[in-house]
Length: 464
Image (cartoon, rainbow, N blue to C red):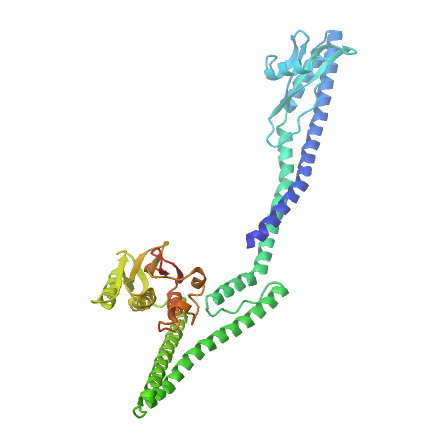
């Protein structure tokens, strides 16, 4: 999230900085180029004047003396040629056959001066050829003066000028970037804490108190969230305790009622049917209490497992594919039992104890056998899933559930209207879901390929 704030802001700042710095860089380059042009223009005009004087008087000594002196001072080459391309005077290494000389005389001719230099940049070439005609009368030239101007000093000056502008600008951008990062971190610190606390709350974990910091609005939000999370966690804990305590407290009255029913005098034929109905209701209520206790235990196991993960508690040996096969064969493979088949990858080892895996498999197979109907086939699958994960699936080829019913299958106490004749409490899948979450996994309910119900558990693999 910090990058989403800093990146657009810094992009805008860099764009503004570039728009402000570029004109300054251009000004430095233009001023230094103008200074170079003025200096070399005086030299060219002086050489042209001395060349005219040499042509008129036939004395070329002043011209040659000036050329040598300029070459000694500045190290620049000068060349004077007439309209027939004959060299009248020269110093340095500038050759009449040099392509730059030929291009200058060809493009500008002998009557057009060329005293402008391309804007000097830090990466410009080291020299530039300038020219000025030697006029003997108006618009008539007897030759041309060419100067190979040395741009090294000008280029160094421009480079230093640019560094004097770019370096402070970069340092300012870096300082602004650092300040922006600090400010974004300060602003977003409570947001990240809120995100972590919200994730913990959705996973039914006890969220840590959100660090108070950042702007006043976020501090108030963090304080309100901490209060809300604490209240919600306390409410959930009270709810779990209520289910557990209520289930325990119901056992004694149920046992007393069952004992009193058993101690009743021998019923008459008319009362025997009512007594059987009472016994059936007591059995169903007793089963419901057992399921509630199982659900409370599973929810408690969720909290214990998360505390163990946070505390780096040593893990028990994981359940192997052989362990699942052996249990299913022993528990469901007897004569006359349901058709339960196991397909498992031998190299898959679940990162949860075998006792918990057996408990989950029993609950799912029992649910499938109960609701798939007589003669149904149940398949228990264990295979590798995503990296570090495994999939434990129990599927049947029964009637299954409709799409609308699948949406309610994980709800507590929910049962399909088509299964009311079967004994049950609607807590079986809720308990399996709690056990899966306790192991750091998740449960999904879908339609099986064979048409029945498929319950898939995504669980961590051992060593992941």
